[in-house]
Amino acid sequence: MRVDAGLSKLLGLSRSAVAGLAESGDVLLDGSPAGKSDRLVAGAWLEIVLPAAEQPVQVVAVPVDGLQILHQDDDIVVVDKPIGVAVHPSPGWEGPTVVGGLAAAGVRIATSGAAERQGVVHRLDAGTTGVMVVAKSEHAYTALKRAFKERTVDKRYHALVQGHPDPSRGTIDAPIDRHPRHDYKFAVVTGGKPSITHYETIEAFRAASLVDVKLETGRTHQIRVHFSAIRHPCVGDLTYGADPALARRVGVTRQWLHARTLGFEHPADGRWVSFDSPYPDDLQHALDVVRAQDG
Image (cartoon, rainbow, N blue to C red; front, side):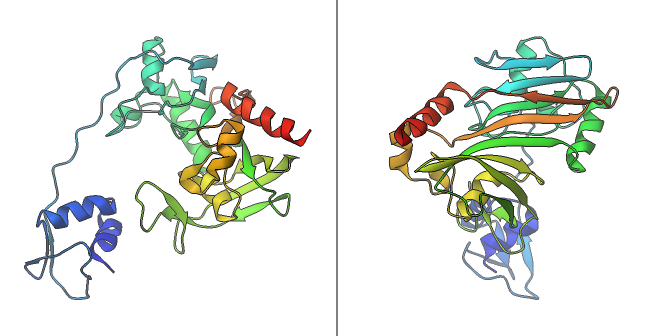
């Protein structure tokens, strides 16, 4: 394997990070500096100088426009996340976060988990809107983490995808891992993590289809990657091959993907609870345009 690819898997670093180490002379093969495209060979002596560990990113309490609390009790807080908001702080992200918005609203959440993501039991991309839950009590954090791991949570998304998936109802079962060439993307790759997406077409139009999506696994960008892999990317998702002309025509500037419903057993008493999020204005407008073009 190439140095950047091999060390990325071995160390859990991005390929660009490994390339930076190689360019700085911090990767040695048998005592000689190795370039990122050099090949790793069996039996070679490998030396790597790693940078100091990054300090945890701290949560800053900042109000978040559009962040709505759908439900709150002693154990959980359910929110409707707006566009352009990350769930928690991370290196390189300087925008608003859900945990920062909750802190600004005076909502105390569980202290379990890493410092920057305390109480967080699942995530949505910054560019994906919709319903999500954050744990307030330690018991709720443990119970919800287990529920997501054991796949007993009902996570349903709505996506407007290009064209018409065939069959109109089906399952996409294809492993996902980081894209072999682009660190910021993911892809269906041999040997990737098992990833399963169930879908059903709700409404079909000439140019696109509105689909209900249920995740059996929860990989990063899973819905976007899977629908791109079957040649039906989410409308507006230019990262994963969507048609920019169609995006302009319907007036959407991000992927048409929304976390519509979230259901789970309440950690306090085991009763089933379910929460829904309406489409935000930009997605509703795009859907109205697609419908009108069929009229």
